[in-house]
Length: 114
Length: 115
Image (cartoon, rainbow over all chains, first blue to last red; front, top):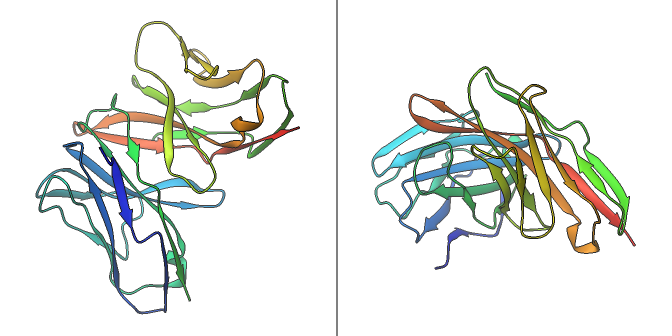
């Protein structure tokens, strides 16, 4: 199994540009989520999905969109990039939405918005 | 709302010395507790977790954590650290909200092992 994969690894955007961060998992996991990691702030939940066709907002959803058309894929869209969105983005998945499950993280996408 | 506090942002320790990374949480309901480790330029991976039963849980690489309900703590310990333990460690708490998993992460503690 490849686990959780993310593309691209690095990205530089100009303010106002849009882009999609890709996330895929091959473990047949129901639950997928997106986090951003900023220095001194830990991980903050952006959006999550409990199954195909079901998504919901996390702690910091503004400026981001998600959709889940398949079990495997959970892309994150930046609608109009802002410097405040410079961060490291992690996608994670788990077998089910229940609280006891281990989350499996991708390697991250490092985004710089100029 | 749940919160997780990791009091130390950085912990320097000499190789082969013991270390304790502290984690406290606030919760009025039952929780599940996790420690994740992040090596440089990588994603997070599970180190150990407490779900129920014995309050002392261990990882395969010598770390252990003890769930203390009265003090709402889940401190991570290792009796003798190695250079390879240099990483950032995140404490996490999960709780139910509408039946779905909601995870709250601490701000992380960077462990720097000094040769």
